Image 1 (cartoon, rainbow over the protein chains, first blue to last red):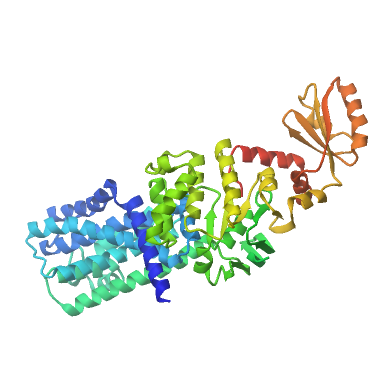
Image 2 (tube, helix red, strand yellow):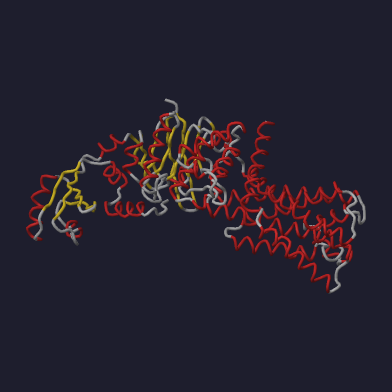
Length: 247
Length: 326
C-alpha cells in the first residue's frame, strides 16, 4: 500500500516536471503572471485607493493567482487537444495523480513568481519578512490552491477560449472582493460573507499575517487549513468533472 | 493457452449510440491479434476500454489477469498503448519524451537511459535524440510514439492504426519491428484499415461491425468463408466511364476498381467470361488481361461486414490519404 502511494507521488512529480518543461517556464508566462496584477496595483495606488500595507501581501497573492491559473487553466485543455492527454490516461496513474501532478507544476511556478515579486517589493516598501518559513508555507498553499482552481477550470473547459473565459469569471470578482485592495473589515458585512468563500481571501490574509503585519497564529493556521481544504476539494472535483467529461 | 486479454460482455454506450455491443473476446499471450472493421465500427472504443482510457458501460475486461476497472494501475503497468494519433510531446526532445515515459512507468533510474538509447537506436532515431519532436516527420513521430510505449517492457502492446498515412519506409520498418517484438514474446493487439497488413501480420483476426464481433478466426479460415463469392479481375483497352456500365451487367453483384483493372464480384466465373466478351464487342473494347481471383481477406471482410465494394474502395482511398478514421 505504502509502495503504491510512493509510486503515485513519484508519478505526480514526473508529470509536474514535464508540465514545467512544456508549459510553464517560458518568458510569456512570467510576464503575463506579473503584468496584470502589477498593472492593477499601479492603477489603484495612483488613485490613492490602496492601503500601502496591503501592497506586499495583496500583490504577491495576485501574482500567484494570475500566474498559476493562466497556464493551469489551459494545460489539460491543450493536452486534450493535442492528444497527449491520452498518454497520461493510458499510463498507470489515477485521475487524481494526473491532476495532482499538474497542480504541483503550478505550485513550483507560484513559488518562483512569488519570490520574483516579494524580494524587491519588501525592500521597497520596507515590509520585513518576519518569519520566512511561515511566508513560504503561505505562498506554497496559495500556489497549490490556485493551481487546483486552474485544474478544475481546465477539466471543465472544452477549448482554450472557454478556459480563459471561466478563469476571468472567477478571478476578477475575487480580485475586488477578497480584501486585496481594501481590508476585509472595511467592506460591508454581506461582502465579507461572500469573500469567505473565496480562496484568495485566505491567501491574502495568511500572507499579511506571516509577513508580520498583525501576527495572529490562530488566524494564520486557520487560513492555511482552509487553503489546504480548498486544494483537496478542487482537485477531487476536477478529477470527477474530467472523468465525466471523458466518459 | 493463457488469455492475456479476456473481455466479457464489454459494452460502451454514448448517449443513444451503442458503440460497442456486449463483446466477448480472448487474446492469447504471444499472438498478434488484429481487430478489423469499417469506419466507426467500434475499434478505437474497444482499445480505449481495454487500456483503461474509458470505462465500459457494462461488462468486464481482464488484462494480464487484472480487472481494468477495479485494478487499473496493475493492468496498465503491463500494457503499452500506441493511439491512432501520435501523442509525443512536440516541445520536448525525443530523448526527454522517452525518459518521461520511463519515469511515468517507474522504470528503475539505473535502467532508464540504457532503455531509451536502445529504443532510439532500434527505431532509427538515436542521431536525432536531442532534437525537438516538433521538427520530426509524421513517420518519425510515429516511431517515437511506439518506442515510448515499449520503454517499460509491456507484456501486451495495443496499437490503433499504427501505420495509417505513413511513408513506405516507416511503414515497412514498423511492420518488421512489430514482428520482431512479437518474436520476443510480446503480445500485439492492433487495429488496422490495411487488410493486407492484418493478413501478413496477424495470427488471428476479429472483424467488428456496428459494435459487434461478427467473425473471429485465422486469416486463412476467414478467407475460406468467402469462397462462395468469386471475383474476376479484368483490364480493358480503355477504362474510362466503364464502372457504371459494368455494375449493370447481369450476374455482377459488385465492382471494385483496382488500379487499371476492374474486379467484378460474380456467382459463377464461367458465366462472367462470355458475358465480358459480349460487353467488349458492344463497347468496342479489347480485353488486355483477365484472371479469376481467389478470395482475399478483403473479400472476406466485405462479405462479413456487408460493405459494398464501392464503400470499401472509398475507405481504402481515405486510408491512403492518411485521414483519421474512427
